[in-house]
Length: 146
Figure 1 (cartoon, helix red, strand yellow):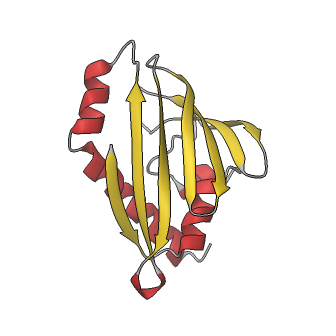
Figure 2: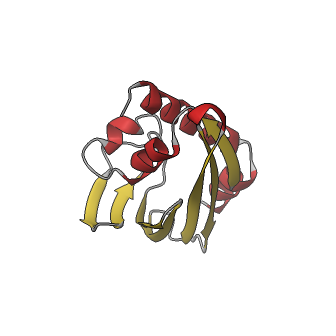
C-alpha cells in the first residue's frame, strides 16, 4: 500500500501524533486504532513495540516502531493475527501554509490466512479510505493544538 496525504498539521505535530505511545494514542487515532486491542509492550526513547488493530478489523499486529531518523517513522510487524509479517514507513515533509505532506508505504507478506482480505487492503480502494482517515485525524490534531 502506498499513498500521500496533505494535512494542516505541522511536521512537528505529525511527528508527535505518530510517535505518541502513551494512553493518548487511542484518542489521537480514534478512527483507526481500537483501544480494546492497543497495548504498548516495550518502549524506548526512539522506539516502541505495540499491539494494535483498526476498529472492526479481523486483523491485529504487534509492530516495532522506530523514529531514530529525523523525518521518518518505520515499523516492522513482529507478530500478527494473519500469520504474516510486513513493514512500512511514513516520511514527513513540510507543505504550504505550515502544514505537512506525509508519504506512507507498507507491505504485508507471508500471510498464512486472510490472503484475499490482505490483497484487497493493499491493492483495492481501502488505501483511499485510510488516507482520508489519517488526514482527518491529523487535521483534528492540529486544530486541537496538541
